[in-house]
Figure (cartoon, rainbow, N blue to C red):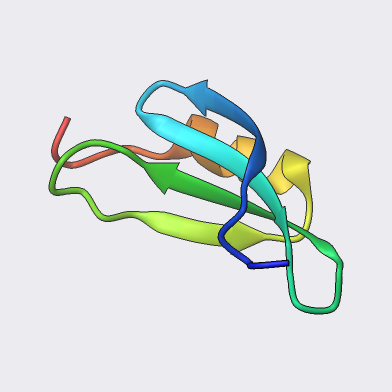
Length: 62
């Protein structure tokens, strides 16, 4: 399964959170800012950590 197949997408402000599986089959969560020119993204092992990062992200662009 490719690592870029995301499901369980949700948004908090300009940040989207998605869940995928890594090559070993473990779930991974990514938080990505969708504001044009921001470029912030990060991977987490738990959905709670990704949600916290999304809530506390302060985009310099938007």
